[in-house]
Length: 247
Image 1 (cartoon, rainbow, N blue to C red):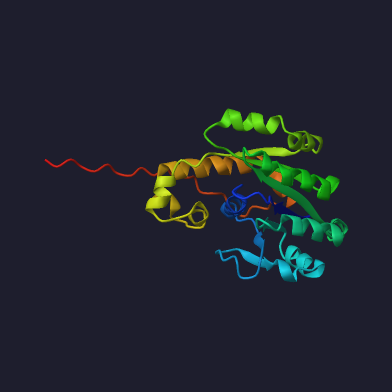
Image 2: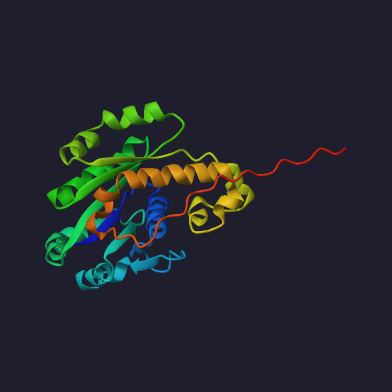
């Protein structure tokens, strides 16, 4: 059965594109056939390896054609288009169309410590209901315990408990200085094969932890569409050489 992984949250800064690229990178490591799509507004998105879908020209037929082109599709819904896609999904009865086409749906909802980022979780539960599996991806800050408590006591968490949602924790970014020095964003780093050499051991450790989180939910996320053709190469910790003292 084919798989559609939908990543959405209209609250800004939840890490949707970063999460999509992490899934993409994980699947690349195993040589899994897949595609990465981004639902966006015309001419507003340009990233290597990502196919942009123009929201203004989206139709059920064109959308299904894109999803049907690969056994596994990751769709990143750009900020501000979550409500649009929800209405498209409901209005066009995409649940029935996807089911008839043999496509299973997983809805991935990245959240932060801000309560407002939970609103899209409630909306998604109302739209997709029992027709999808759910995964909550927490964007962890330095106050990990506080982050956990805010989510656990929320109404959104209780709703996701009813749907038996799986949770991932995306570790804190500790290499902002290295990104700045290399003039890279996190998303661009995830698209560069030499990012580990350029950014050093903190990035390598972060990347390894993220891949571990994705691996822990592999069956839930990708299902039978996960068909590896190669084994991933082990990550190498890169240590920058210390400058030698002058004699």
